[in-house]
Length: 614
Image 1 (tube, one colour):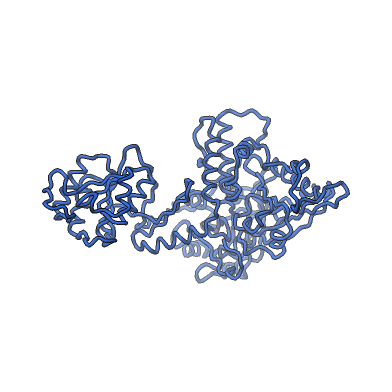
Image 2: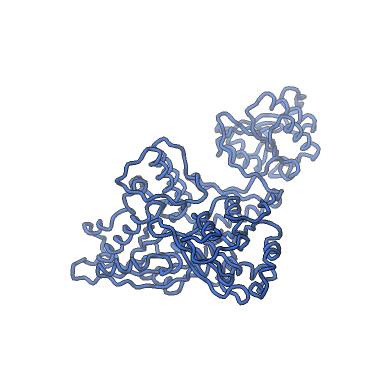
């Protein structure tokens, strides 16, 4: 593969961020809180929930603290010490809690820290007025406290004094009874605004999210039962190609563990929160052992349904067959569903058999009483899962149910629609096909890339990066006036790039090679809030992708000069005569001297009028 002569450049770090960490307390570790009011109580509660011991230090000790701190002390949840009674400090001459001098308080703290090496963190909360307190620690006293902690390398947080904080506290929401916590930080720039942002994020969180986290944790433990190391994160994408797996083949413990953890990663990425939250022990074993999608539909044959059930009609051989709909869900955003698809999902479906790439926002439209099953098309299991889902569709339709086979994008664009139509037809069902907006067109638009543009691209071609049964695909050769869109090719991008730029003729490419300075865009999760677009050249895109962290399937590849046409002031002179002589400077201006650019997010303002939120 040929590369540009200049070495790649990497993203410059932008200072000012926080290093966000999630600490778990070691045995007998503690936090020390200097304060007595409700802020101190809040800090103590957070420490207790993280399994830290909490110690309150304040002049006057137990007699001076707020009601909550006193209650927790009475119930042995925390300890309260009197800063005026520490070794090296002058004894108080009165029982009335009064602050010591800044120097005396610093001596008290230093003495306590030197005698209690288990203190990991120090919070100073009495720098603000609160509750019944009429005293506020001075700036000079806070600086002395900060100096004592820094001298002993104990991180300290001083409320409302950001420059005296080694760390800040995010606004945190913990989902009760589950391991899930969410945190929002403004890096000390606006605590109340951070709390508002956190509330709005939590309000949009699906109800089952916390329980889904708990169930995935159980599933991970089951997947690791062979004793092998956790390898869920060994690849930046859960779709890295692997060989087909058969339930009859022999596996070593390491191979078994690796396969199971890959499937856990796939489930975490694609299954709905509701499906994850409702996983039973039996369901987990079925998932990890490849025993099916869940309760087989044959169970309906021998069970009596409750009176009034929509499935309560007697099933007899003379009953008319159900229907099978092949439906396209668009690129992902529920606002891009067609009205026909929305109507079928919300009003006609008895069973939805969904591809794993269909996002939660679309599945959330389906009424709760409608069963939804997700195809288990995990790496190494695609063919078996495809057969499984087709059999489930026929089984359900044979019982008179309306089955929706839900696919991403348009079902005719690499959606196996043809083989499903023929399979269902052979078994007596003529499918109803509902077109969808293809991600091959919508994805580039969401990234600001037209697949055709006068002066930049006169045509486009869509192809796949995955050959049948793992075979190599043949990609088109270079045509300056054409945009190339490759679906399902990001996991195989090294092979795709080699095919495109290899200068010698190859059986994997029809036509001349692509120049290595050719623009390329990787568009991930197009139309969704976490959409990401990585733009670079063929020479540097592999490094750009590796440097951008974990990949976000599904992704697509766009190659062509149309990528530049609407960027900034735009460029629609690409197809002019002698334009090729300016290509190097054109790329330089486009990337602003860098080797790549990463663009986060997608603006969905054009769907605000719909009733669907994501």
